[in-house]
Image (cartoon, rainbow, N blue to C red; front, side):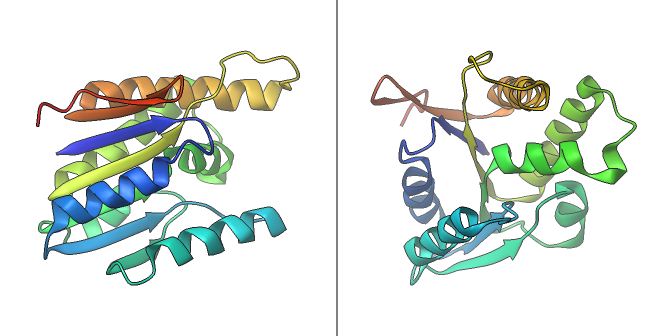
Amino acid sequence: MITLILGTPGSGKSQRAEALALKLAGTRRRVYIATMVPIDDAGRERVARHRAAREGKGFETLERPVDMTTLARGADFSDAVCLLECASNLVGNEAHAAANGALTDAELVRAIVESLATLGAAAKELIVVSNEFPKDAPGYDDDTRRYVAILHAVNEALRGLADRVDEYREGVWISNDMD
């Protein structure tokens, strides 16, 4: 099962995802797949906050900024609840990876979504956290506009793959979960 948790930065996505992971896991293995590559003090502080929030919750952390397909094929997640934090970082990392330099944006979206589908198929449960940004906010440079468009396309494709989507809209969490 794949769950997609979408929202704006600061909306509580991580807390919601961790709570869901704990609920779904029970006594199963809990794997936190961290995609962020901290490049400055703010990034390092965010990583530290996330690590502190997970402390004592039994998560095994895997630092994996790109290539979820190889991760899925190289590990046994068949009885694990995996939480990927987050697709937004994964998209940025993959978009700037030298290995993906020749891909069109559509090919990049397809590769990212296929890699997450492969990870979802390998795991007992996969929870994917992702940000949503306005598609064309004033002040975006060309690289940011491209990133936001790719992220939006990935999120839309993940909506189609997900068994459950929790989305933060106008200050309220909305879920398509039938439980």
